[in-house]
Length: 308
Image (cartoon, rainbow, N blue to C red; front, side, top):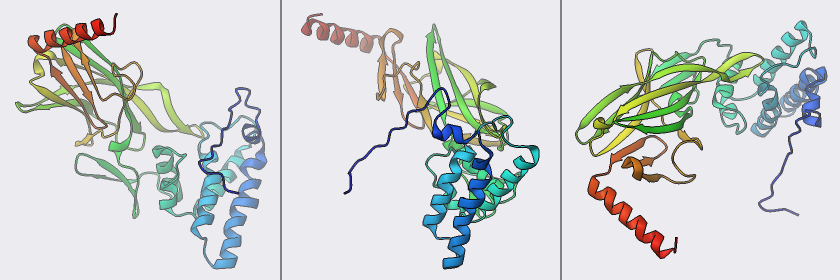
C-alpha cells in the first residue's frame, strides 16, 4: 500500500564507511556507473523514444548530484587520465539533461547548479546581466539564480554607546564579479543614508567541486551611528559589482543574533531599540524615554502577575 507522509532518515557515519561514502573510494563509482547506468539510460531512451523523456532526465540528474557535491576527489582513487575521463563522462551525461531540470534539483546549491550548467554549455565565463538592483549569469538562453538570492547571514548586533555594530557574512559565487563595496542602505521618512562595510573573504567558509572554488562567504562589519536612526529606519544590505548595485534579498539570522527563533520582532529594552526582521531587510527604531518606561512598567506588572 501507500504510506502517506513517509520520511526517510539516513544516519551519517563519521567513520565514512557507509555504503554511500564507501562507494566514492572505488573507481567504478566514477567511471563504470556513468558508462553502464547513466549513459546507458540515455541511450536506451533514445533507442526507444527517439529522445530522453523528462522522467529519465530527472533520474539521471538525481544520480549525478552526489558526484557534483564532492569538494575534493579522494586521493589515489583515479589516475590523472581517469580524472579527465570522469569529467568527460559527466559532460556527456549532462548533454542529455535539460538546463531547467538541473535548476530544479533540490539537493544542489545555487553555485553548484551554475557550475553544472556552465560545464554543460562549455562556458568557462558566462555573460553578466544587471537590472532592478540585481545581477544574473546567462549561458545561452538559460539564466541561473539571481545574485540577490544568495544567502546573507546576520551574526551579531551590538549596541555600544552611540553606535550600533552589525556583523554578518554574504555568500558570493566565485564566477560573479567580486564586489568593490558592501554597504548598508538606511531609509526612513526623513531620507536615506549609506553606511560602508569593512569586508574580507573567509577562507574557512568555501564551497568547492573537485578542488575548484565555486563560492565563498565574505565576512562584513558595519557601524551605524545611533543618530542616523530617525523614526523607524529600514536597513537593507547591498553591494556594488562591476559598478552595478545589488540588493541582497535572502537574509537569515544565526543563533548569536539577538532575535529568538521564529520571531520577527524584539524590543531591546536596555538599548531602547525595537528590532524587526524580514527576509529582505531589518528595521531599527529608537524607543523614547516614555516608551521605555512604559515597557518597563508593563514588564514589572507581568512579573507580579506571574509571581516572580
